[in-house]
View 1 (spheres, rainbow, N blue to C red):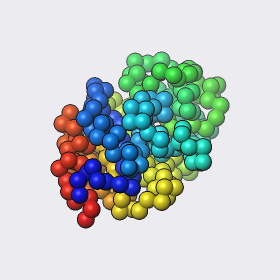
View 2: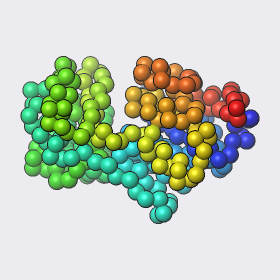
View 3: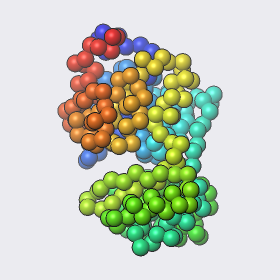
View 4: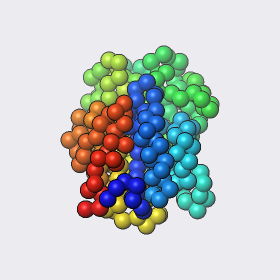
Amino acid sequence: MNYKELKGYLIAIDIDGTIIDENFNKDIESLDLLKELSKNNIIVIASGRPYRSSKIYYDYLDLKSPIINYNGAYVHNPNDPNFKEIMVTINKDNLIDLIDNNKDYITNAFSEIKDDVYLIKEDETVEPFIDRLGANIIIGDYKETLKDNTNGSIIFSKYGAMDKLNNYIKEHHFPFLLRPWDFNHQLIIEVFNKDVSKAKALDIIRKYYNIKKEHTIAFGDGHNDIEMLEYVRFGVAMENSHPELIKNAKYITKSVKEHGIKEFFTKHSFLDN
């Protein structure tokens, strides 16, 4: 089957490292192909980003489908009031407790509630992670500023903190998990609700549109894409992906710079098998 014949598929795409590179350059060739596919298929953006910083890609593709943000903690459809909004949060008191009692390890943090960004302190190390465009930035100690449960949180920490923080969470029975990664020789830790994943959000969307499981495709590059790629029939990792994702992916395609999504669709004819 030629990709132009695809109809009735659910196709999920990550953003960073999947349709844009590390310098935020868009893979226009892949985006234009996805825009063409969206005429007969459901294209869903599935990102760790907030809606405000993924909307540009949603609009470029002229989508009318739901969008997955905060790795599945916030799912909504700006064009369909019948699609019930999904909001899964992190308990603010648990988060404040974790940060306040582990200051020897945690150097900074920011949390988001839709377009409100709660930053403990201004620090240049947080800049690559905060999208300030359209955001309301509130700065200060969380005990004073954080008034509600959050969609997600990013902690900046010293190396060697993971065991300490994981043990603290386990001892206090906090209902969230930690996902670490290294960025410019600094430990970055994502705090997320244990019931959140892109896969769970995608399952809700698939059932909403009554799409068969065998008609699902997903592209990603990060550790947070593992469950999503395992969930779909055709789970595709970019060749520059996190090593754990590579091990769990069913297919590997080229990098963003080599138009990996377009390469997958134009060079494979097994989608009808």
